[in-house]
Each structure stands twice: as structure tokens, then as C-alpha cells.
Length: 136
Image (tube, rainbow, N blue to C red; front, side, top):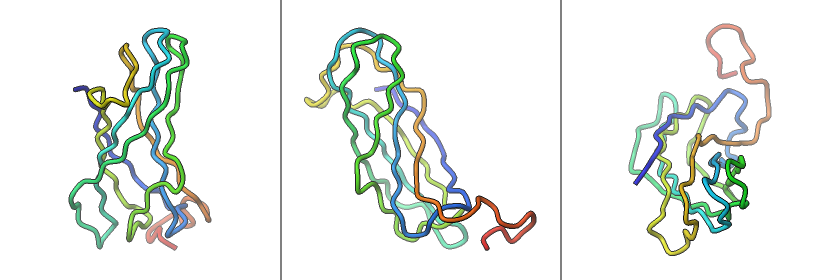
């Protein structure tokens, strides 16, 4: 099992109540076009009111392109992930892993994961004030 650990910070431009779309950036090591299955296990805590709780896991699958070293981005499909009570400054702690033991993972080579990041809807400038409080 190989895995990546990361921490993500939700910026001040986040549109409250909208979904999050994590995705994995990776590259294949051979010309196989089999499917790679990624797992993203995560927990989160909102600023000032949140407590890190039990983890949740989502799985993403995508076929390799057949080109060694091709930069592939495996996206979370709609409707994405809803994080109850997410706010600006929410912190998401995540573990990304290849679920190669699952029958859905048919890729025969190594899949090189570079990082995972997250997309979300915005509705304001990232920081509207130059000094605290930043949440306006």
C-alpha cells in the first residue's frame, strides 16, 4: 500500500453550502490502459466550531491513457462531496491511496500519484480585508 497524506485549507472565497470536488494528479508508468482506482479518506473541521471526526472515504476510477508519464487528473464526479458546516478556513485532512487490491483496478503498472487538490465554487474575493477579521 502506498499513500499520500495532505492537509487542505478552504480559502475565504468559498461559497457556503456548495460541494467540494477532490481530484488526484497522477501518471502511468507503462503503456497499459487499465483502470486505476484511487481512494481518498478524509476528515475535516470548520474554523472555531469544528472538531475532526471519523473519516469518510470516496473512490475514483480512471483508465490510464497508454502513454508513459502522461499527466492525468482523476476528478470527483457530481454531486461532489458535501461537508456539513464547512466554512472559510475549514481544514480537510486527507489520505490518498491506490486501491490496487480492488477488482475494479485493472492497471498493471505503477501509478505515480503527485498530489490531490480540491475544487469548489466561489462567490467572493479570497480575502476582502487586509487585516482581521478576514471572514467578511
